Image (cartoon, rainbow, N blue to C red; front, side):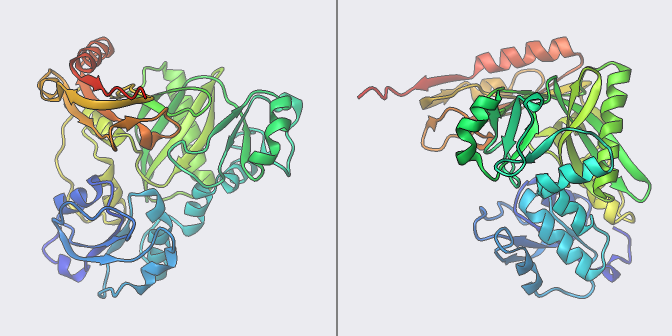
Length: 392
């Protein structure tokens, strides 16, 4: 920070996760008041935090107004889904640079997002609310999803009108959209006074029907120049239509017959270690750039690309009970392996319905897509699971 930074006051950070948020503030030398929710795990470290305050912002966004704040505060940040609205509310009340509250609401509510995109003619994807706006036969197949949700939770695939009518009572109130075929990508960006800056395009793989849980991401996506421009342009038009003007964004796009279609967007960096992949191949830290979009006087850190290509791969174990995992240390020692982590709750891995049920991941880098694929295969083969016998 500048020598006279005491005139700016500290920042406020809402949410204990992801760890990259507080780490970026500490790296940039920005002191902050850390706001955590009672339902969150407590912070593992508090470097840079001058105070830790607990309020239930996840269930009550207005609770952040009960926090005793110094005067002045330089900015309010949140890098977690449920902190985005309280951060915008507090920022607007303090007249600080922020993503507008209205823009956050549009991204958190998928029906409002669809309406805003349709009004701006960003795309013409058919949509409606089950039980109120019946789809036409030509709109099938459909995706049904909660109007407010995250992490692939609650997504349903409805192949035809007969299946829709059969399940309409159970699914009433969900948003339906025409199912978009084709590969899926995400666009990582940071917006500031100079516009939208695309940091990279990431390719996504999923489990497919019916829950579409992500199984991996690779950056940069291998695309023709025309397809890359179509995806980039679609994301930028989406950000404009929703009024997203500051900070990090993560926009999910599908490419169908050469046409890019918005799936959804978020006023935060992507999950699934995507910001790490972006930094590994570009040297651009999305968290630090998001902070500097609101605090342009903060001096940037120096980062350099480490690889030309990087990927996150999720271990494919499902519907098993794991007794022991071996080989992680050997895996971490392999060329290109940046992370190798396993998280098991009680040892049982269910059939995945949403992203939080995945048991662990690898982050791997390389200098070509071919070498990246070989390194992922070798790393995955090094990690072994011993399964517990659950036969009655």
